[in-house]
Image (cartoon, rainbow, N blue to C red; front, side, top):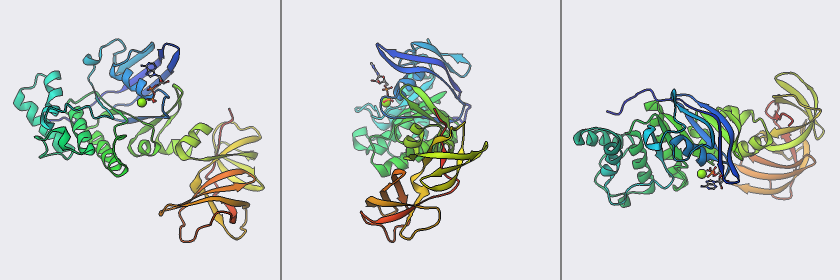
Length: 357
Ligand code: ADP
Ligand code: MG
């Protein structure tokens, strides 16, 4: 039986990784609670894979310590760590059937009898929706199905930590959504600790308990998906996570929770974190900007530079005196053509006043 067992926490303490002159990970400390799925999110080259491989034991830390549960595994070889990894490329053995692929890991790492291995493997395949596919070769499966086999192969090992490195990158958009919710469900059902790497912010939002946003080898911000989205702590996060517009504003007043700012002649109440100077930067999500033809209260003028109709919404680039704004408008019945003069409104209470560096 695949157990609903308690999996382990993971802790990184002042971990550094150098490749020659490249400082890939710069003194990172991180706590991952048992049973949670934590995503390492960030642009290509920021160190996500390096972090994951160090947790797996496939890469040595240059300095610092890594703990799985209470055990310091920093100098422990990969084969002694009870971790399993799912790769972007599936990494299935092409000459083995689906069932043999899933049994393989069990035969290497456990003393299970062959009949028991088969039973557990079939259970794993059932869990990922592949009951009945056990005798096929990987080449006889779609990409999504192959990745499910890889997930089953990892899950049957009952790892202390399950690691995913961009597992959906080779799948098309629709399948990606499907497989990601399956992964999330299995992880939650089994209470597995998982570390998940992606560069896709929507995917990170969809699967994570906590998101660790990385930038050039350091943690830029960690929090739940809603914290990261609604309370970005820097321009980098605001831009990377929410495609937010970041504009200059003047702080008129503030307390711990809110601030009143002036922006291009209008006054707005904003969310606030940190200690602003008088001139500050404001993050405004594209959904919180609306356009009207008629002048309305508390708006400023703009000109539509670009309009893209996408069915569910229209995306605009609008030139204003506050700078160019990216706008996502869900009202699609009528939309503004390029060159139209519009009035721009920003939803009150929504923008976030960013801490000044
Ligand atoms: P990500 O997974 O976020 O795209 P990586 O962890 O793969 O980033 O890489 C982080 C940095 O470390 C990059 O600058 C990359 O070029 C460098 N790097 C990764 N692996 C090696 C290696 N084996 N040798 C030298 N540099 C490496
Ligand atoms: Mg990578």
